[in-house]
Structure formats: C-alpha cells, structure tokens
Length: 161
Image 1 (cartoon, helix red, strand yellow):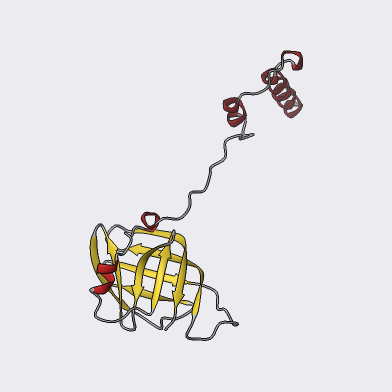
Image 2 (cartoon, one colour):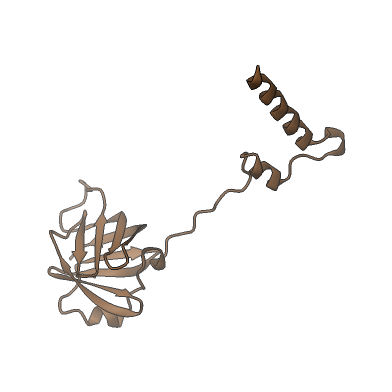
C-alpha cells in the first residue's frame, strides 16, 4: 500500500513539473537533470598529448636520439613517443626523457619505462600487413609511479623501415 502511495505521489509531482501543455511549457533542462532524465550530454574531446601527460616531440627532440626511431606514437596527430630498438624518447613537462625498451617493439606496440614512468602501447595485429610495416589505431597508457596516477588515450602507432 505504501509503495502505491509513493508511486502516485511521484507521478503527481512529475505531472506537475511538466506543466500544462496549453502553455507550451515542459521541463527545463535543469528539471530534467534533477529527475535523472538528463538532457545534458558530455561531448568527447578529441585526443591530445596532454590527455596522457606528454608533450609533442619536435624534430630537434628526435634528432637528439642516439638511434634512428623505427616506431612512432602519435596522439591527436602529434608525435609523443619515438621508439628505437633499445630506447624511446618522450617529452614530459617540457623535458626530453629517455625510456628503456622492455620487450619487443613492433606493429602491435611495445612497453617502455624508466624509474618514474612506464608507457604501454597496444594495437591489434594486422595479418594483412607485412611484419616490418604496421600502422593504425592503438591504445596508450602512461603510469606515473611517483604520483600513483595512470592515464590512457586513443592514439596512432606506426612502425616501419
């Protein structure tokens, strides 16, 4: 019985909030949100380097590498990680940082780290692409051990000779 009364009271409140149809008034967006009907929708922002906590690499940053990069991670079209056989270069807080390569680097991604951060890049294997050439959408995750934070972003990963 109490459930019926609560449901009836809720319905009366909802109808009262809607107002009369002859006045052309309905629920305001604020009222809809308050009732959980949500008219506000979040718009997803396009990925950018700062979403993962990295700065874009410049040509000078990559020229400072001891090895020629064979793979590149781009976020929002901007290069943020250049990977070679034994090391990778990133820029964080305006400072170029070297990471070691831990495991194989190739068309499906790689894992890079130093004492402060680790970056994992992964993408599905493309059976149609030759082993030495690969490019396409990927997910990248940066873990910051000092801050205890983690961030992930949609990216593009490309490797090739």
